[in-house]
Length: 47
Image (tube, rainbow, N blue to C red):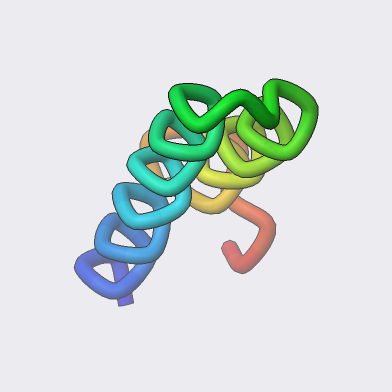
């Protein structure tokens, strides 16, 4: 389960960074925060 959460978190953070680079700062910030919340190193929503 932790591996799946890490993968989801990494995908969300990378997508957030790409979104910020494309100029949509708000959506990028939302994706990064979501990635940090989902990741098992952060405040996980699933555990």
